[in-house]
Amino acid sequence: MVFSSLLFLYAFFPLNMLFYRFVPGLRAKNWVMLIFSLVFYAWGGPAYVLLLVGMTYVDYLCALWIDASRRKNERRRWLWRGCATNLGLLCVFKYLTFLCQNLHMWVGFPWVPRIALPIGISFYTFQLISYMVDVYRGQVPAQREFKVLLLYISLFHQCIAGPIVRYETIEQELTGRKFRRSDMAGGIRRFTIGLAKKALFANHCGALADAFLTQADAAGQLSVMLSRPALSIWLGAACYTLQIYLDFSAYSDMAIGMGQMIGFHYDENFNYPYCAVSIRDFWRRWHMSLSSFFRDYVYIPLGGSRCALPRVIWNTLVVWALTGLWHGASWNFVLWGLYYFVILMLERYVLRGAPERWPRWANRLYVLLLVGFGWLMFRCEDLNVLQAAARGLLGLNGNGFSSYETKTLLWSNLFFLIAACVACTPWLMDQGAKLERWAERKKGAMRLQQVIQVASPMVLMLLSTAALVGDSYNPFLYFRF
Image 1 (cartoon, rainbow, N blue to C red):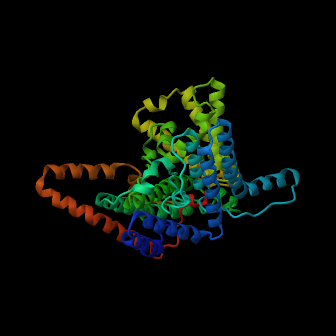
Image 2 (cartoon, one colour):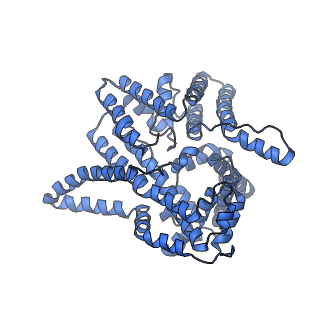
Image 3 (cartoon, rainbow, N blue to C red):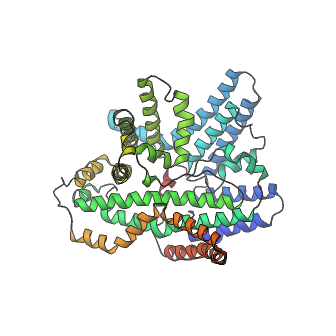
């Protein structure tokens, strides 16, 4: 079940809010959220609910023992036991097949298991690790009630695809949140904005990316990629670049909005990353909950930047290799992580921050070109297909620059693509802020502002529903991570 499915929008979520609204007391409301969250998770993989609950229970006990221990060595042992359990299970479910496939290819290893990936395991594993580490550091006390910790881990708003919510962010709200009308109104607006980004823009961008690339990342499609003209590959990469931002940020918007409706305030996950002025700035804006996790729980514990230069480079290499592997058990993801490691090292030690001092058009173009190629690398799991795509971008596959089909598809979707580009910038939000400031100065305009605030979520909901009816292309890209 995805947030943008009609089943979720018109059955699951309304029932959740109805029960939540009318049961008395916060403890009962938490039970409602826990039950609905476990049902939501079970919808995509009933057997793996046991894995989610089991991992949470192990970490619940480890955190209690960490909190109760007075000797540092004993606290550290319980931390390592909990982290080893989490990472061990993550490696078994996500990386064992990948490892055995490579061993089979290199040394003839006879056994290659086929293990289904539990939905959201990468996200909730990191949340569990952050919780235990924060208890170990003394930043938060261990949670005494298992059901409260399980609610934190399993909340359907963010369990499947983030943002990675730290326990300390919502610790007080788990047992002490209050209903505010302003939160409800703001949450509804945020949810419908995310839904519109997904239904009106991301889905069609994804369909266009497939059309331009003809699903060239699928198995056996190398010959198809080799047949694409250069313009088609450029446009396919551009559409995928739009899709992955609009898709993932839409999910985060919807998660943040649903949390806000019931009094949870999750941290922001995106800050218009395609407006960045350098790759370093891009990663301060993209998937911020993941970036901050690796910074606080990997990079800084390794020594961060307060080391000799070789150690700083090593620390950065470890972070980006892990970032690539976190996204998927495939060599293209490792290559994608190392690609950003190289660029960031060049920006820091060779260019010395020069892109941020370039003219705005130049640094924006620099970021979009590098990030766009990075997303093409992200998409093409077959490295032979990736090589063909890279050659095709330069027109080296011998297929010319364009074709009639490519031009027709481009011109028939030109205005849509311009609108999608605008949706990736803060322009619309800036115009809304200007309208609010104008309404504050004009007493008679306040009523117009109130009408817009009430009507805009309804309009976005109706338009999104119309777009989703009969639309067979409706995945969330980050569900598979």
